[in-house]
Image (cartoon, rainbow, N blue to C red; front, side, top):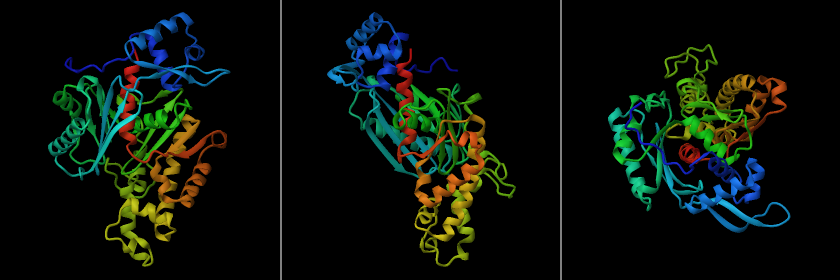
Amino acid sequence: MSSNILTLRKLSQNGTQTSILQTVRDFTSISRSGIVQKTHLPHAATSRAVAALLQNNTVIETKLADTSGPRRKRGISLNPEKGFCIAVEYSAIGLEAIALNTAYQKIAENKASIDLKNLPQNEKILKIISFLEKFKNSISLSDEKCLGIAIVDPGIIDTDQRISIYCSTLENWENVPLANLIEMKFAIPVTLINTSMAKIRALDRLEIQGSHDNLMYIEYGNGIGCGLKLAGNYISGQNNLAGELGHIRVTDKPVCCRCGGIGCLEAVAALPALKNHAISIINESTDSVLNKKNKISGLAVLEATAYGDRLASHIIDEAFDYLARAVAAIANVVNPEIIVFDWLIGTAGNQAVSTLMRSLQKNILSTHWNNTKICISKIDSFIGPLGGAANIIDKALEH
């Protein structure tokens, strides 16, 4: 690893402060006695650490904000004005960026629809950096307050070398040192995180709020991935290669995947696969709403299914059955408390979701199924950047 890599700014000075800051994050507006109860730290150590955090403006105190217990008490919260961070996610169809303050509150967002898929590598890099620069300049806060920038990559990454190794949804995207290029450009610490890991962090931190220690998140779109949290720890695997759910072989059909494999889940169930399947059989149903579209897309197939289109429903039923089999295989191994699907799954409508659930029940062991909650995420935009930014603040709270 290069010795020139910039270090993320820390908000915690020691382990006691870390425990307190993480508790304040998870139980905002919590009193000193509440912190002691949650962390089991001594009262004296807690009081000293909270006083130090108040003195350097890392936390703020509000009268009567803690409403737990028989009487209201002063509540401790993260200070939203202590700093901020930026995260940008790129994909085949565009860019999304978000900025969060140190209380995990959104202060800015932007997106751009750009066809990045087939652009030469250098052009992709220039467009990403240009988009990021414009977004950063739109935030009326000084760079000194920026904890860091997160780069959310849709493919396989090397976090030690900070290189994007390969992406099945982007052409000409191999061994790209994007994190280093951005850090040199802006002189702000940069972290690289893959999409599945970013999205499960966003889901866990901002939607289910850390309520489950064993979690599966199923990323669905142009690719298919799986984020895992087991025994309270996010699972990235050796060399950060965990989560490639889309490249499990689910069929013997000779369907080529962009990874070079045959019969991969992504090749038969991701959005591009839905589009290709619809185009190949569109002439079989003249009354399909897809016949009336100038351009068929995977999203259009999902939406047509929700309206009861028979051709689209046939495609989705098959795709969701493949998806369910792959998800069930992982669930049978790791036994999660909760499985959360990407919000896009819900756009197929209640009947298609019911079909997915039936297939999951058929393929997941009954001992697991009876104790597993399954739902669809409500976060319908910026989930990758949200997770990337949350990851930076999480790391800033650590000593």
